[in-house]
Image (cartoon, rainbow over all chains, first blue to last red):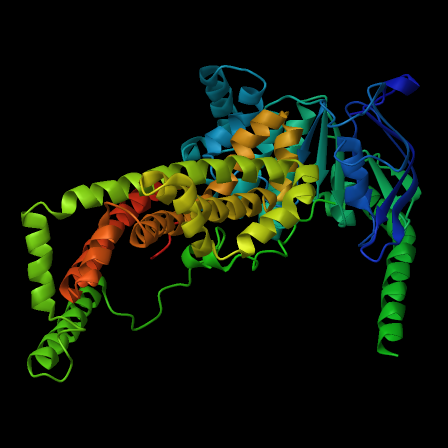
Length: 281
Length: 287
């Protein structure tokens, strides 16, 4: 999917300008989670954010979602400033976020019923989505009766049913085993290709980021990390995720981006080790 | 960050441990554990042995039947109280007081619990006062309630109210506050208003905590009624026990105890039923 036309600056699906987030520490001090983040995501683009542990990836996503307010800087979505929850976005969390007291179909239809859609209509739409994610026979189950992969499928249906313009995904598949994960990635890519949604995808797995995205953004070592690089992934679509790791272009991009990411990862590792040593001393 | 918060206060209120914290995993059945049937048989045998020993030791004079009346005599007294209809008006009064105390206490505890959990300002404002009242041993309130509300049912209702209220209140507060942050964020991202958050997330989540307190608060409502009657009343099971004690009728005291025990057991069974219905989404536990 290519986008030859650059949209107007105010029409980015997600636009973070100079966003800094400062958290108070229990000791009364404060620390910067992220500093001066600039991030622009065009409508319909798949952008991954990769960074070492503690680089504030989730903080960035939560600011885009409107769940966190930046300490300084601005967040815009389709030209409008984000105050409170970003109504044009859905969020897929790393943890299980399904309501355990609602059946699968009630979980999936939640976004629609809360928006005032009649229950019958919401159920019809939910059944369509459950069929799409392969859970048609599990509508009446409760989340605890499903496997991890099935819960993620339910979460996908729950997030997509409200037809958002933006999907924010925070390592959604990190808890799954490798095979299930690849299947889920493939299905996600298929759903996305049929849509025109912007995706901001957070992962610590560079392979996953390159395989899925149009653009990979690299975050520096935390705390107070910022964007240190951005790479265009011009591997043609549709992509076959099962074989993409042998693609020469993939290999080349991987080498290039990893060269940059490696520096940040070892910085994180070094500072963690220094802390350990100073603790031991 | 959306890391699920681990409640630091989980241990603050030990009573809820009674039925297990909502998310507690039940251990798998261990190897060599006896089947349900043999457990039941064992329980019957244990009860028979204890009551039998009591009866025999009383009859041969090892224990004094004046202080520990024979089980057979207690049973006779229970039967006389029931068959003559003597106990029913008293039981009815006690139940009325308990039900009223439970309903008002639970309602007030729920409302205030939800309110304080959602409005941080109120919680911080009222916290020391609530802690103070909670620290007060409630039994000392019974005499003053007798003076305020008289010998009728209302002094007992007020007393039971103070017992029930705090249990339900603290459990509701903790239940609402310990709701998984991710569930709230997810519902908000799906467009939930404050009212919808309450209905779809906070109330169902707090329900597990409220139910774990329900068994205890039902018991406390009855305790409140009986203790209140015991201290001063003109009717009720507590009054009947106090009357029996006044004439050194230990059989009557024990009969009153047994009748109360069975009433509470039956009520607890009903609460269990209700709990199973309302919390059927929970993983089945083997208890």
